Image 1: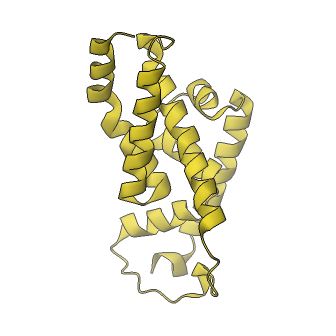
Image 2 (image 1 turned 180 degrees about the vertical axis):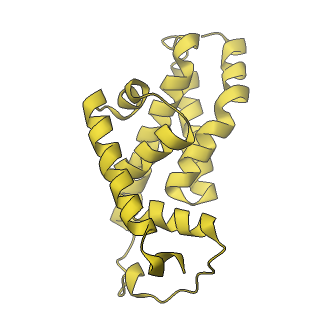
Length: 161
């Protein structure tokens, strides 16, 4: 990969990678750090990265950086005395985006990533498998289970009101 190809990759994919990581982490600064680290790693390994496969490489590296970040935060973070589910929240019925974000937040990290990569970013099952290190059939099964969970959460009237 040449310097010009790297710069084109940054211009073309930085927003997509950032949105993907931000949807998972839900913290802007952490998402920026993860994306910056992914681009830095791609720059250091640019001699081995083919320009045609740079998007897949970048999403794979960013995904793994995100998982590492989540694991690190979990080790550091102290457990809250009360669970999130025990808190009472006011949810206006018209705020569909917030309801969808809450539904996604209830999924595991893997399930949320699968849903976002497939339904939000539009990747194929094969591409998602390569990014996340899963077989195509595992991607299909995990994605189906995630969608079932989302459906069960979204059809309950108390979750929408």
